[in-house]
Image 1 (cartoon, rainbow, N blue to C red):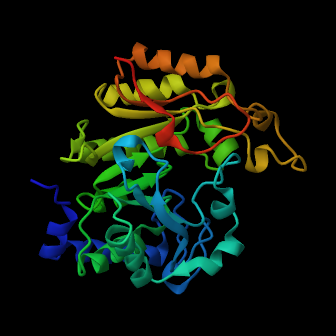
Image 2 (tube, rainbow, N blue to C red):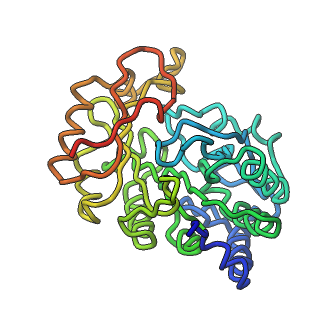
Length: 336
């Protein structure tokens, strides 16, 4: 039997509309993410993520740079939201995540967002819809999903997040999201503050991950095409000088379940404020002002064995100065 996303049943029962209304109401005193800005985004007041009432979409396309079990032959239909609730000094997408004045022009209605989803499904034949950096636009995203359901949306939905998510919001997404794809960044709160601008990243990302695990468990559901249709895939980007605290992060993940699926990434390179020659840099920023070294990445792969983490993918180590984010072309399974 072909995979049927659970959000279709929520739509048929009216529960999807109820969830959408609850999420929209949260915008009146915004607590959509752990920043808890309390501004009225329904009246277009601007939160710390520099976002108001309408979603901002920087681009959308059939994307072939995700994990192979998601990409397949037709790619993931990624919708890249503008702005972000973090301010990562090394963000590889800083042009769209941290330039809010330019991004304001990319506001879209929920109806237009639904049209994008249907175009990716029906015209591009994508295997799934991937919402990239969706945390600050969850209410708009869910309303658009409901609109798209009315005219035939029926493929899995991927929640591609920095993991600085509200548990209350994640509970409302239970049954709406098919695949959670969180990037667990740090195991040290100081690193979260120095590199991403929030003081409590570790606390909230770990709580969020536990909620995602509660919803999905450790097993991936695959379709007849061999692609993942439902489940939890945890990303972890290795940083120079172990500023990501990889050992503690992987230990925490193994404590949930050693059967969880990981995607360990070697693609870090200094960009944004880290590479800005005119920016004043702290000692902590200077610690990540280079690419990772092969031995650093090798140590992280050894930690996987240490904690019995055997499911997932590891990027091939990229030693060249030039980086192309073609994850699917440079990936191999963990060695059993």
